[in-house]
Length: 293
Image (cartoon, rainbow, N blue to C red; front, side):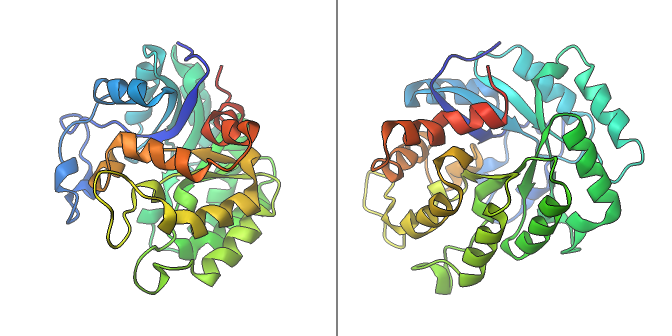
């Protein structure tokens, strides 16, 4: 079902621990996430926050998860699109993509993602087999979500340059560090790499991931944003509101902040923009990139 116009949450997850093992949830600090999270858990929170559509994003590198997410989107009044997974290095990647699109719920496939965070090779994105897979994603009319550590951003620039027919969506601002020496200002290397990535015409960025990051001493009762402003201003200046989109990263965000606070943080950060510009970040960019409604 197509969700009505409103705020679009361009990045959320669901998982059922009885259906798929989630190894990354076994990491220290993730204990509260070690349970099943469903659309029914998110729906009332989204409704209360004014979110009328979401993009659900893959969590495991298994071919069975994406069909399940497609079926969820097809039956949902909230989930308006799926970023799924295929093996980009497989010889039959084009056939795998076609097979997903040809499923009864295949029309809800909007993009593909492989978690580069799990790859030891910092140049994984520019392997010839991966570049061929990325080209197949673009040929299928899909975008590609990038989730990676910040030191891999230069490889992302090379991949996006080599694949001009693919729209690359950078998740979580490229996961910049907001702690230690970088708690007061962004790492200059991240600023440089974000600028190079944004300079390409086939790239967009998600204002996600950092919105739940608390400051060193958060005031009680709300999710402050002053400490996030340098990172937000960097991506806003480089991408502009037409290439920047809000995403909650629910339920991962709940490690630090409830869903309502994450949405409120996006509202507060964008408060000084024009109505049109805020509308793009809070919904318009995601609708265009993920072809919603």
